Amino acid sequence: MTEKQADVLIIGAGAAGMMCALTAAQRGRAVWLLDHSSKLAEKIRISGGGRCNFTNLNAKPENFLSQNPHFCRSALARFTPQHFIAMLNRHGIGYHEKTLGQLFCDDESEAVIAMLKGECDAAGVHCCMPCSVEKIERSDTFRVSTSRGEFRAGSLVIATGGLSIPKIGATPFGYKVAEQFGVPVTKLKPGLVPLSFHPEEWAAFSELAGVSMDAVVSFGKQCFREKLLFTHRGLSGPAILQISSYWEHGEPLSIDLLPDQDLREIFAQHRSSKVLLGNFLTQYLPKRFAEIVATQWMENKPLNQYAEKELRALAEKLKNWQVTPTGTLGYGKAEVTCGGVDTHAQSSKTMECNNVPGLYFIGEVQDVTGQLGGYNFQWAWASGYAAGQAV
Image (cartoon, rainbow, N blue to C red):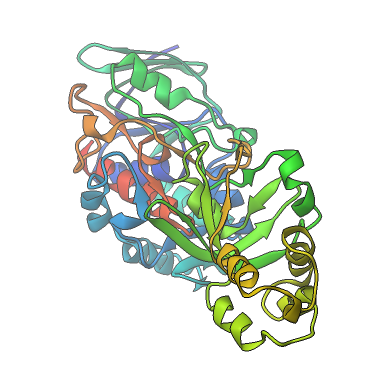
C-alpha cells in the first residue's frame, strides 16, 4: 500500500478538526482528515437536543476555564461568533437565540455538519473514515500508521476531543499523543456534569426528582443563576452543570434557593400568621420542596408558633443552603472534559507545541473548557481556525 503524502494530517473529524481542515485547505494545503468513527462529528449531532447550540453571542475569555486563563484570548479574538454566523448565512442555515446569548439551529444539527463537510469537500480535504491510528513517528516529518495505510505530513493536528460521552467514541487518544511527545497534560475531570450525593443523605430529596427551580449556585468566586433540577441521585440543571466544572471534590456548594426574595423580611411581616409554614412557603418555592423544608428542616407549624430566631435561621438556610456532593455522574453524563493538554506548552497564536515543531492540539483535548451554552463549540471553531491558518 503506498504511503499517502500530505501537508497537514488532522486526527479527529469533529468540530475543531473540520474547522482546521477547511481553513488549511482553503489556503492551498494538502489536507487529510482521519477519524476512528464512521460518522462525522457525533458531538455536533447530539448537541443542544439535536439542534446544535453552535456558539454564544457573549463569548469572552472569562467564559473559559483553564490553568492558563489568557491563552484563549488570541484565538477567540480572531474567530468570533460573528465569523461562524457569517458561514451559516452563506449556507442559508437558519438559527435563533434562546437565552443568555445561546444560538441554536432552526433545523437539525445535521445542517451544521453538512455545511462543514461541504466546505471541506469544496476546499479539497481528503477524508478517511473509519480509520484507526496505530502508531505515530516523527523525524523531519510525521509518519502515521493506520488501519487504512501509511500517511506522512509536515504538520500533525490532534483534534480528538476529551473523555466525555464515551458512548459516541470518546477516548484518551489525544492525551496519549501528548505523553508520547513529552507535552504535559493537566489534571482531567468531568465538566458540565450532574452532581451526586450519598444515598442516605439524599433520601428525603430523591422523591423530588423532576422538580426544577430558579437558584444561584456558588463555589468560591464563581456563581451562576439558572435552573436547578432535583434528580434521584442528586442535582442537575444548567446552574449545577455550570458550577460542576469549578467544583472541587469534598468541598461544599452554596445554593440561594430564593434569589429575588428577602425571606427574613417576609417572615417579619407575617409573624402573626396562623398559616402552616409548608403552605406559606408554597408561594415562594415549588410545592413538593416547600413540604420537605417544612417537615424535614422544621416542624410544620403555623408561623405564629415559631420563635423569631427559628424563622431567621430558616430564611438564612434557604438563602445559603450548604450541600456537599459525593461526586459527579462521571464522563458518561459529562458534556466536556475539564483539563487537558497544558496550553503553557503551546503557542496561543497557532496552537503549535513550543517544543515539538509541526505538532498541534486543538479543541476539547486542550486545557480550555467553556461554560455551558455554546462556548465549547466557539473554542472548537476558534482554535481550529487558528491552527488552520498556521499549519
